[in-house]
Amino acid sequence: MLIGYARVSTIDQNTNLQTDALKAAGCQKIYIDKMSGTKSERPELTKLKDQLREGDTLVVWRLDRLGRSLKDLIDWINYLDGEKVSLKSLQESIDTGTSTGKLVFHIFGALAEFERNLIVERTNAGLAAARARGIKGGRKPKLDSSKQKTAQTMYDSRNHSIKEICETLGITKPTLYKYLVRKK
Image 1 (tube, one colour):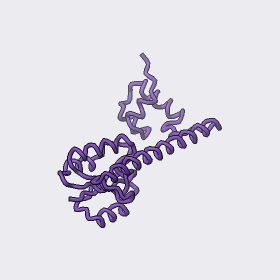
Image 2: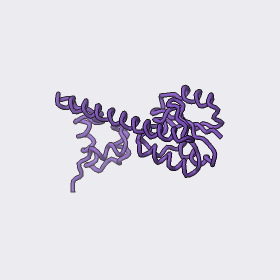
Image 3: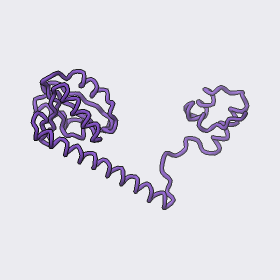
Image 4: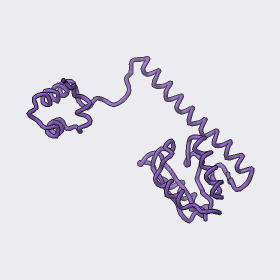
């Protein structure tokens, strides 16, 4: 049986391109995850793994949909080999049911990891350059200094519950605790 797997990195993205290609390739079942490929534990991928049987073929649109880490891809191919399941990647024309397909898989897997590492390096270089120019990244604080003082005063007075403080300031408990200075 041909079983397809599609993945996009965010909920906002859609999988139409991938699912159309998987259906055209003859996949009877298609599992879809909407989360980063850097996460090796993905719910639909886990369900798919439970469905694979000897003689099946796992079909992906591209190798990077299955995983971005060479280690993860190699772990997958080793797992699939042990289960006597093939892997087929439509864009790279890889079919691990053949010796040549296995070789090409390892080459493309290494390239996918290389690409991911380049993205990380460029991102880190951009952040370092921004910091050098005095640009601070990250989220803006939930509470400005006056609201922080208000939160601390309300907390220290012991006249307000944590829930009341949070509702008054429009924040969650973890956010409140982040800003509180505990006095012993």
